[in-house]
Amino acid sequence: MKIKNIRAKLYQWTGPVKTSDTIFATPLSPLPFQKDSQAPFRFFSWLVVVVETDDGTIGLGNAGLSPDVAKLVVDAKLTPLLIGENPLNTEYLFEKMYRSTVAYGRKGAVLAAISAVDIALWDIKGKIMGQPIFMLMGGRTKEIIPTYYSRLYTRDLDSLRKEAEHYKAEGFTGMKLRCGYPLRDGIQGMKKNVEMVKVVREVVGDDVDIMLEAYMGFNYSYARRFLKLLEPYNLRWVEELLLPDEIHNFSKLKRETGIPLSGGEHEYTRFGFHDLLQANALDIFQFDTNRVGGFTEALKICNMAQCHGVEIIPHGGQMHNLHVVMSSFASPMAEYFPKTEIEVGNELFWYIFDGEAITENGQLQLDDHKPGLGLTLKTEDLTHFNIIE
Ligand SMILES: [Mg+2]
Image 1 (cartoon, rainbow, N blue to C red):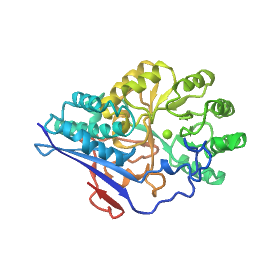
Image 2 (cartoon, rainbow, N blue to C red; image 1 turned 180 degrees about the horizontal axis):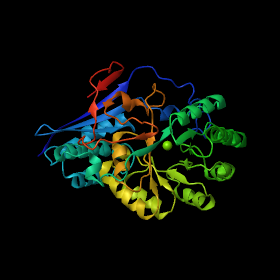
Image 3 (cartoon, rainbow, N blue to C red; image 1 turned 90 degrees about the vertical axis):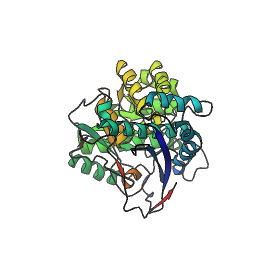
Image 4 (tube, helix red, strand yellow; image 1 turned 90 degrees about the horizontal axis):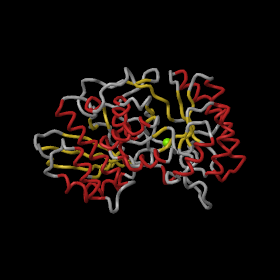
């Protein structure tokens, strides 16, 4: 069997976007002169990679990170490396892509492109073997996948209260809110961020996990004081307090706080996560399989993390992450981005694929009989997309 053809399709959303009530800290918000420090972190396009073999099998992969740049990488750099190769040689093909691009790749958009291709190759492997991808990795490690609700973008306390109440009533036993006030707002902003956590804790009670997202928006000295103030609220974790390159500052924080620290959604490959483990920097890894190097790298990182007692709770829902969660004892739960109107871009995949798992009582299930990833491309309701091939 040989790879015959690869198409990188860029889905650009042209429909309505709601941004009015989504204000939270980002890596840009500490800087002066910022009117909209979230603008570079909203994304309204998605890349789909379609790999076709000479026997007509189709594999689907995707990239949500910098999809326009990832498309260029797939078209110009990766496709010529792959045509004519056996798609089942996933270990060899990852290494071929990684080593061929290492001079300018290693992290970021190039890894997103490699990940999209790797996911498509595993989709083909599953379809050829007649098994879902999780069965090709560790098989089933749990009867069902618990999820936590990932939203609460607002910083308005009344809306926050209503939202949290609603998710608890839907059966979710975990939910994540965002830090509404950035570093620039100083001690007053810090107190308001704590107030947001306090309000959610009051609404959901003691038996629901609360997670707090900082989206790389703070620095070491802020984070240190902030964590102290957060201690009474029994948070499940605080996410990405610092820039991803501040590995040693994460290590210092981890030594100073009892609150679990998470991160890694902007880290890449087994090498990046090995560095985090060596530095004892985080309690929870949140790689996204469509950034980290696909299933090929995700598997290795799960195995390393397990030895260090580090949990894997991938970034984003989506089938490529759910197969990892299902197949690894390192992973206790999945993130759930619900299908909503388009706000920050995380929702877009619902409008592109059919077959994504939907939660019931805060949990979701994977089908033992759907081979590969379990996804197909939508053929209807695409009027709000401009698709570039
Ligand atoms: Mg995050």
